Length: 460
Ligand SMILES: C[S@@+](CC[C@H](N)C(=O)[O-])C[C@H]1O[C@@H](n2cnc3c(N)ncnc32)[C@H](O)[C@@H]1O
Image 1 (cartoon, rainbow, N blue to C red):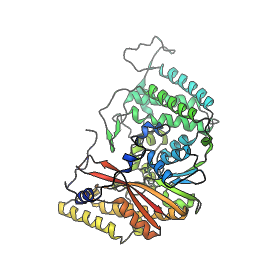
Image 2: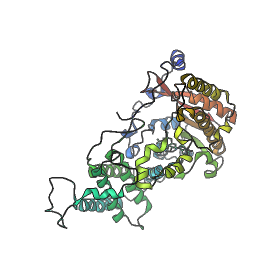
Image 3: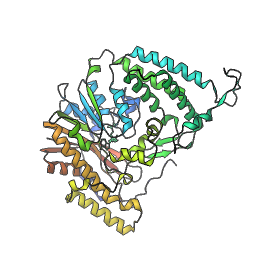
Image 4: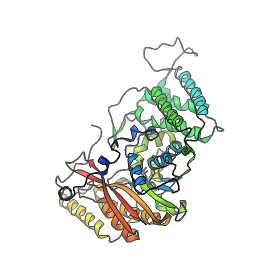
């Protein structure tokens, strides 16, 4: 089994049943564009597969609905892999992205750098590819191989590369052979890409390389972090070639587009400090999907990339990133967390946390993580209140803030209506209005209900 679900402790949700009975609106996703399926079907968006990313149809829907044009500026305060920004760029709309995870910064910059010398990229790629095969020829990957063709006369064991394994990145995560092949690609890249090489060329190959780490590993996301049955080998060099070819092809298709020069700015930071990065009253439209109270620990989704390419290895290293993030999981609550003060006394949150507490007591739940459930919910909404109030500062008057969020059953199956609570918080903070639309129903794998994924649009 890939990973264990927390078993739901209730099997009936009265809120879901009431919603199903009373609300009959059609999900937008079923009528809008119609082909919204996976980001993997779209150029640029498929350069890196982020399981928690959303389809480009969502930002497109908002941009069309609120008539956002190249005269406007868009922001995604939880940028992830820059889906919103790539859609905006395709339409010539300038954008900002703010993201806490170190790894996504390079991915975002690469996906948005269209004004790049493709011939030069090709020349670099040819050199890298040549070096990959030269280095690989020095190693014995196949038991049937003998040393007849090695220049040195003796093939070296590929397990030599295990000395490059970051501490804690065991073979169950990524088997020895594919790991050695990834290290060969990295070695070839570091020989060809010098300090004087333009940063966008480094970013391009860095993104292509890191994007094939998970497909070369035993890790799966379904959507939680899991480990599959170990596979001894993967066609890692083939995956790299496919990735680079696809990326070059997408860039080639936009090389004459006016939008290749559309400006963007990416900030590595914490959205609870938005107004420190972005000028007041400068943004027309915010489009994002923030974390939601679903007990997801976001650094896990890039664990391998962070370990292999960013030297984020120890618990302390991960903690630095986790502290920059909103509390969305019991594993990123720290003693000093105190965002809850921004929503203290909110009756909708109190209703949810009282019910969670009641169920915990009824079930005699005593585990350490269960005891943190109510704190997590308060901290999450407190953190979102800070982001909402920071967004009020950077938005122009009349500007819109659209958030894609899902309802949650993660804590003792108490139904959390995320969009409804966020709207309540936002109106108290001074937004003039809020609209909730059903984007889609999300199939839940752990119980029989489909949870609502909704778009909350707030107006300044
Ligand atoms: C649901 S994902 C966004 C997905 C993204 N729109 C995409 O298509 O890839 C939420 C993102 O918020 C980031 N995040 C969480 N807390 C943050 C914070 N306080 N400031 C900035 N980014 C944060 C996470 O690292 C994650 O990438």
